[in-house]
Length: 352
Image (tube, rainbow, N blue to C red; front, side, top):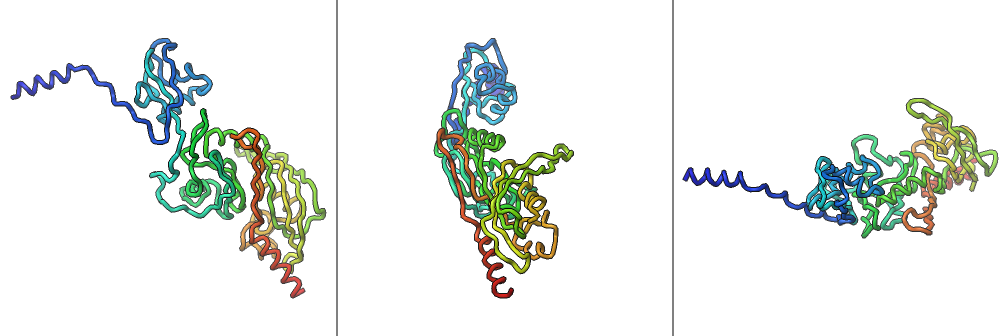
């Protein structure tokens, strides 16, 4: 009996090694490219082979290595690693996420949204959501009470993506609003939408309009503000040019602040706290509820408890994934803006 066991072990040791089992396609993934490895010059590491066979998709080593680490590359039917060699005649495939069945994946600790989000616009490439005041766009720590954690619960995954594109595992905000500011935020669902929309914001090809309530009334009902904003870069603060176009919609009297003004801002640049600083430093009329720039006077302190009265109401841009389509999204003035103006005006009429 012992002899038979030893002979069996010896036969197993001398048997040719079996190829590892093929890696099945992950749910939502498809093979988007199969490469001809006959042009390779002998054994080539997988990232370098990707660069040689498809330089358009993989112009740099980092992009090729990232695809391997994301399990998007298959070698002879199994997931390829960065250290694997590709030989002439091997089957090298590129697998990409083309469909996401649900954003609510197992990595989410809770199946409940951190807070409710309104969706102003949505298609298979992007969405525009309404960020509530008091919620940061991205996490300020380890908590979930931020816009990035809330959008997967409010949006539906794309049904299908175009060739050469990739569905994101979760939608991503393309730009950000201050924590205290409410309003429209563009979120991308696919890789191409994220890249192109980010480029549009960087090149200032996105039109934005904000509504705000100011303490006091500007001297002119409309105008253009050209005033530098200090920006910190690598710990060094330098002034950067900033431009804001404003127009007054209405002015109401107030017993607490003499007057309150509903104004519309159209920023032409995107500096940090640009509208808040321009309102306080140039117009000399800080935004109601702005604890950073309202000066802390008696009138300002009486309005702080209701938060910042600044809302991103309007977005306009060329659709990043649909040629020829112009996207325009607008939301109504927040109810608290009308409530404040109506209450202060009524109180002034009754008690003045």
